[in-house]
Length: 161
Image (cartoon, rainbow, N blue to C red):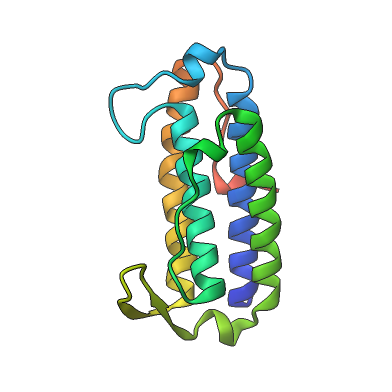
């Protein structure tokens, strides 16, 4: 299996899991959806936004070589806006991944922060970071949703597809 195929599969699982969590979140009353549990990145809404913002920021950095301004929370005031944002981000990521071959995935690129500092990084490390970052927050979201009586069910990779 090629590196490209592995990451395409991992990202397909990532988007599938996001969708399951969004579907469960849609079943919550607003009070639960917006309730801060007192730890972590905040409410279900806040966690979903954090995932979207992170995926967007790293994708744009990989596309441009520059760290871009983060998505503003005001652009995603509710679940409907987040659902649209995730749909757009998934499509953009699928396009980006399709444009790379195995050599591109293992190549070292230079990324420049908003402060102007450049640093080399291997693309696959960014991709793996996003998968593992997503997994952490998917787990946190699943726990919150389950506590509110809206479990997304088993999210294990082995059950994907």
